[in-house]
Each structure stands twice: as structure tokens, then as C-alpha cells.
Length: 302
Image (cartoon, rainbow, N blue to C red; front, side, top):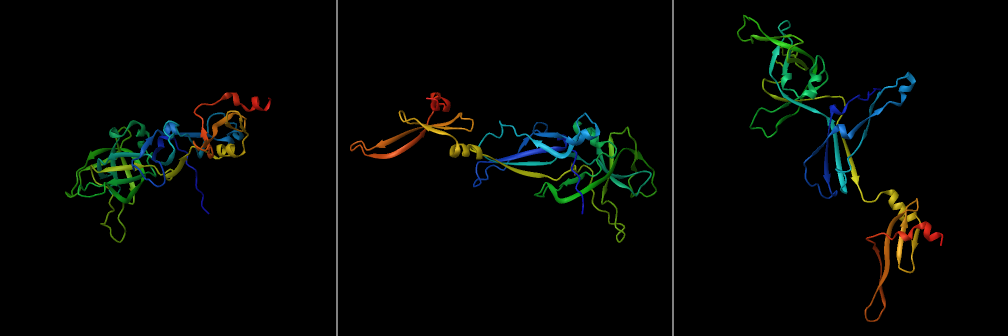
């Protein structure tokens, strides 16, 4: 049996989208709207930390509270919420090899073009385990991304280019060596080496100037459906099981919640035939304003 370790993530590792449709019969607009993970995703403090005498916040891995803003989720209907690893979009600067180890091939990224909030990921070995997906440089292709194709980062270190004299003119003179002060990072990916049966058949790992999508593999994408309704089980129970009164004088019918506060009020009356006076319909009509003289306490203490 295997063990799945819950991920210790932060809201900065996540992006959250939602889609709204008013009913199941209508898909509506397929556009996804984005939410701020720092406002929606709340970390949970580990309740077991007291056993170790820890007083500070200790993240409870894999457990997070989803706080949906009422201003956004106020309309009655169906909301599909998508929680997925955040995407880092950048371009490959070069596909090169190390000067000291020419058999090690990797991708070069320029950290100066990376958004500031992602720079810590590009520190030495900060991208290990991340997935790289490739965008299609072929402008005639109908798909912007090369579907179902990716590579996994096995290491990354800051590196700088060096010019090396080579006897073989078919090889690139620019190679790379590790330097922690450089703005470039050298990433090795898997698979990147040729199989034994075809030593010259190197797997495709990208090409210079190609756009890529870098995402973490800390958790699987999650899709949650939330239905916003006008009535829930409790309000339906109040209508069925809550205390009720009917004023015989003015026909005001009042329903109370389980605290005996007024929940709904209706006018009860009959519609009669204008000529014969014969009753035709009994009507229950919701009142536009509440008559607070019909509180449960004031009626039952008469």
C-alpha cells in the first residue's frame, strides 16, 4: 500500500477560477473568472502541535478552508470552482550543456523576466519536481499548447554562459558553468538522455525562444460544484415544523423560525364571484411588509 502525503502549500502556489451557470439546462458563458487565492484559501492551524509545545502557527498539511466572497457568490445558480497549481509562463533562453559535463543537457531560463513573486522558486533546486509544458511555435497549428507533452525538472542551478573553443565545428561554442550570482538558471529535465538502443536520438526538451508553462506538482487540480439556493434544509424545516399563527381578524398568516422570530408573513383571503358572491379561490399572498405586532410572544400571552 502506498502513502499519499498531504501538500504543505501556500495561496501563492495556487490559482482559483470559477464558472457560473443559472441552471443545469444552460451552460452559459464558458469564460472562467479568477479569484484571489489569498482572500479565498485559508490555511488551517495544526491542532496536534500542542503535543510538541509549539506556540506558533503550524500548517495542517492538505487541509484548507475555502471562504467564498458573498459579493461574488450571491446569485442563485451553479458555480464550478477550479483549484489548480499556479502557472509560471516564460520563454526558454537557450538549450545548452555544461562546460564541465558536456553530456548533461538542460534548459536555460532568465530570472530577470520572471515575476517577482516566483523568483524564490528559481533559486538552486527550487524547481525540482516542477512540470514544464510547451507552447506550439508552429503558427499554423490550431492548438497553442503541445497537448499531453511535458518534462519534469530534476535539478536547477544558477549558471552563466562561457565561450569554449571546440575542435568540432558542429557543436555550440557557448556552454554554461554554475554561478550563484548569475541571472540565468540551468534546468535539467527528465527524460533528456538518449536511449541505449538509439544513442543519437535525444528526446525533445524544447528550443530557444519557445514559450513554456512551468507548474508545481504539489497537488492535483480540484473541481468543486457549489449550488447557491434560495432555501436550504433549515428554512424548509421552519416552514413545515416551525410555529405558525393566523390572525382571524385581518387574515395575516405568520411563520416563525425555531427562535420564534418572524420568518415569513402572508395575507390569506378569498376571491368571490362578483355577481353571486360564491367563493372561487383561497389566496395566500406574501406580504411586502412585516406586521411586527404579530410576534409569537405577544400573541401567545394574550
